Amino acid sequence: MSEDVSGLTLLGSSVRGPVDHVESFPAPAHCTKVRFTTDEVASMCPVTGQPDLSSVEIVYVPRERCVESKSLKLYLWSFRDRKVFAEALAVEIATEIKRAVEPESVRVVVTQHARGGIVLETTSEL
Image 1 (tube, helix red, strand yellow):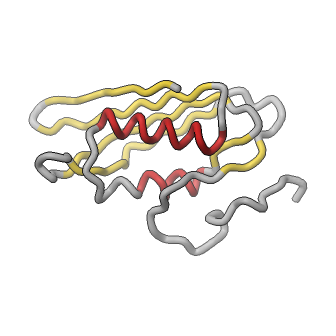
Image 2 (cartoon, helix red, strand yellow; image 1 turned 45 degrees about the vertical axis):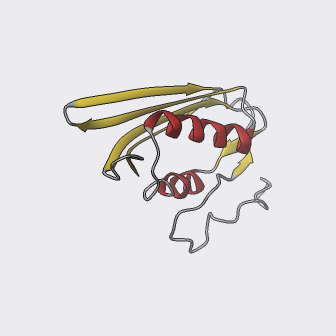
């Protein structure tokens, strides 16, 4: 394999639980935008402890590195038992993407599904 994947510790391993970080690999030439979406991010309300289910969209413009998707999945899993408001969730995810790959830009949209008849959408752009 010609790509430098020496920093990838999760891909190809038997890790089957949440992690606290996202891993990256060298961005291929001419990759101009990356978009991830999922409808399966769970967290808990910081006040009531009730479960919150959210959709998450992550869009970033890579420079030299790209997010490895298995590590992203395991990172998003880490919110399952955490008490966090949707607004803070969007900021925390965007901050981790920024840390991991130093993109030109990153945009994270968290859409918290209806509980009590209200859908919440929050955005963080770095």
